[in-house]
Image (spheres, helix red, strand yellow):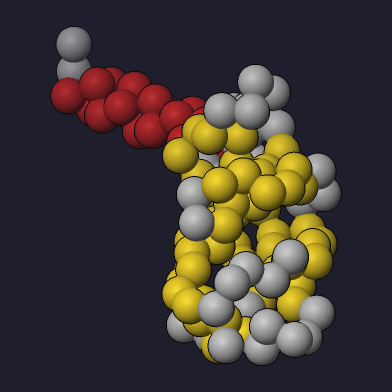
Length: 114
């Protein structure tokens, strides 16, 4: 087989595989509050998020301190936070499949409630 023929096949394989690789990606983004933010426990606090499910994801879940507190069915939106007790807390948005199992796409932040 000629080297140029082999190189052509490799280039074609890369071009075909690249869209599949980029489609496999998803994202989870917490827009607000910002990482490290201080929340007033007396205010109504909301989390604003955006997710891209990728081919294996179906929806997202919201976790506070590793405890699931909400199912997020919209790819972009906000959700009211039942303000946790005073102190430091983690907020995570995780993309899950139809069986509600996290698929590895997530974004977590730390907040402090005063």
